[in-house]
Length: 134
Image (tube, rainbow, N blue to C red; front, side):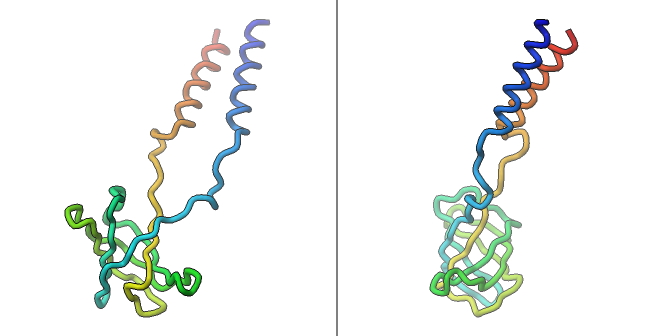
C-alpha cells in the first residue's frame, strides 16, 4: 500500500513538472549587432558585451528601415576579443550590404547536461526506480 502511494506521488510530481508552462520558442529572439565595416565578401561586426559569439556561428543581415528585410547570410570566421569585433564571410546576399544594416545572431543553447530538466528527470527516475524495486 505504501509503495502505491509513493508511485502515485512520484507520478503526480512528474506530471506537474511536465505540464508546467515554459517559454515558447517564438519568444526567443536573435541578438542584434552593429555592422562596423563592409568589404567585398566580408563584414566586421561589433561584439561588445557578447562573449558567447564564436567562429563558425551563422547569422543574417537585415535592413531595419525595410522592416528587417533579409539582406544577406553570413558565417563568422574569426572573433577578436581585444577589439570586440568579429569578421564574417557573406555566403549569400539579396542586396548590397552597408553599415546601415544590422546583423542578427542567435545565441547557442545550453548543453543537455546543463539543463535543469535533465537533472530533475534523473532524480525523479532514480527515486521512482528505487521505490518500484523495493
